[in-house]
Length: 174
Image (cartoon, rainbow, N blue to C red):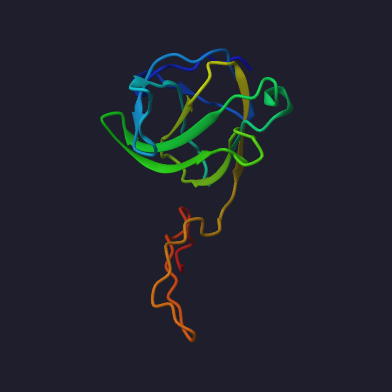
């Protein structure tokens, strides 16, 4: 699917279904709460914006680690998932480099979503302006596992305190 994404939050293209999407080249510029000011040598990085509003709670997987994107066509991508409204976005999740040590700068991220919330999907390219593809997959789930575990505290030889954020679609007795 060729879906011409837009260059800012207000014009983000809505993803409607599971599919492979193509970005032909980057344009626009942005900042995100996930990575801060997106610049290289003081110049704003180019971004592409999509949004997804699930009708059911579940998991979203976004993957640019695809054969079409591998070397010599490898695109160094970063991915930010934002929530809120365009005037007040917050970082929900982010990903960068499947394996930087192995020179694989593509991105793969799975995160829980709640029905009715808007999730902004923002791609930026840190170094290049090459076209690339990404897969978008939504899987409905009635109960998702905990995804975000906070730092531990009270670490000793005999105890540890572990804290986590509740699942986005937690059962009533959770």
